[in-house]
Length: 221
Image (cartoon, rainbow, N blue to C red; front, side):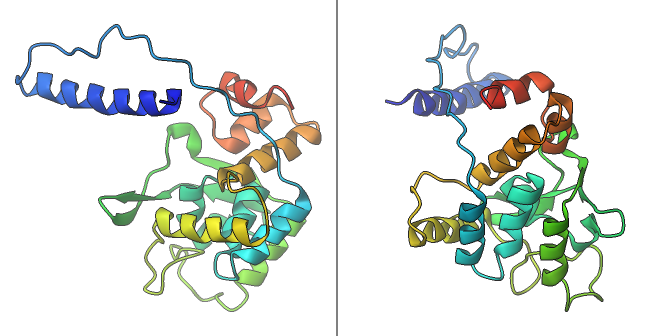
């Protein structure tokens, strides 16, 4: 069994026993003092500009802004799915992450970001601004809390549904099946590093908890 699978099973069991102890069903947990196998570090391989553009076309016009937010602002998929129209400040050329879309028991709602450091403001390049402006060209009168990309009734799109669209797009353009939406975020980070941004700047733009976390992921770049 892969180390990642073992860690996932351990996490579930540990959570179950913590609840059982709290409810006084058991006195102690067998999940203490267990040494887990080290998870293999996945080497980051940024996508090329051509690959990003191809994927943006392949997911379709409705989902295209999500790819733009991933590669052009480093947003996580939940942050992109939860991005409101009012979160994009065109005059100041920046984007604010203040919420995300989360799915619990098949119900998708808007919630707070992953961590406190996930709340952030990100400067945007001309190409990103132009893409988003084009998507919103016919939506200028919509309320600020309207989602940039939403379901037909205006509710947030479930992440698993978009993941299926993403997987089909990856296959359609002939890219390796292991490419994830999160690789767009890595591509954004690699562009920041290539342009000479400091570790602290990359950390702030990505919403990482610490600069050490950023270094752990991107030091080879």
